[in-house]
Image (cartoon, rainbow, N blue to C red; front, side, top):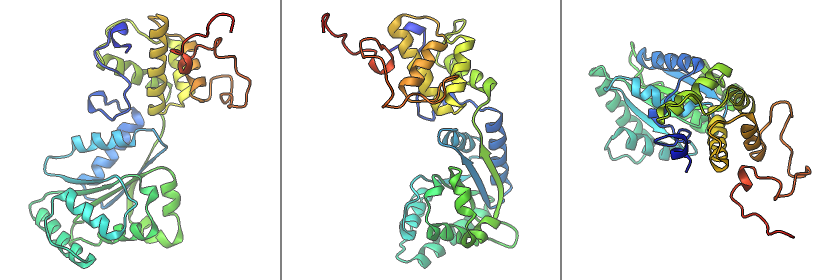
Amino acid sequence: MYQEFYGLVRSPFEMTPDPAFLYLGEVHREGLATLAYGVRARKGFVLLTGEVGTGKTTLLHALLAQLERETLAAFIFNPRLEPLDFFHMLFDEYGIEAPCRTKADYLLALNRFLIGRLEKDQTTLLIVDEAQNLSTEMLEEIRLLSNLETPRSKLIQIMLVGQPELWELLSRPELRQLRQRIVLRHRLEPFGPADTTHYVQERLRLAGYTGKGIFKPAALRAVHEASGGVPRLINILCDGALLLGYARGEAELGPAAVLEVARDLGLAVPGGGAAPGPEAKRPPARERRGLLGLFRPRPARGT
């Protein structure tokens, strides 16, 4: 909607992890290096945690693009599975075609498949996303997969990815065997102010922007403070501010536009604490022309 107005060839702040818009801040570069080392060195278990929206999925896509072509990766997005369903999904991801009815059948077939790949010096990776939702039973099943090994090497590299609650889950006494097998661990933190600015500017550049700048420095500071440096929230704020600016014909955006979007979305705002809740007194609709009410028809005069 606003692309032509701002001289963009595509939307710069989509929510999908598009590799064309990949931006890695310092903490993401450290995380990528840690994950890549863990896979290439065949360390076994690796753990990646981070708050919602900090870029875990984006980092995983960057990792898969960086690994050698011979690396075969299975990506399990929905961990709320029974053991046999989990193995069925795993075999589908790896392209293993073997008639299996019991867990023993699956394990024997998987062991043969992994040994065949190791003999060709090929790495096999299993990534379990949203792992904080795994049951204790499934975590134990995944731990047992790490027993598939030779005297010199692990047959499968396992990466558990999830929110910070995942580490709390792994801290339970009954999961101490799994916790002790995690050899590398990285936690993604939100962007700092400088990375937030670079992130916004780089996404605009990749979307085709060639001007002097849409967001004023004060607006970029407001984006960082309202989003806390979380990439997903940065995208939402910037997309909303661009829409607001387009509707008002503003070629440059100051902090007021960002803060208006933040308030409409219920985010914390700089200098104002948390945004007012639904019970707080808000201006009437005809006086508020924020993001959520921007294109509502104005009430007729006299009403």
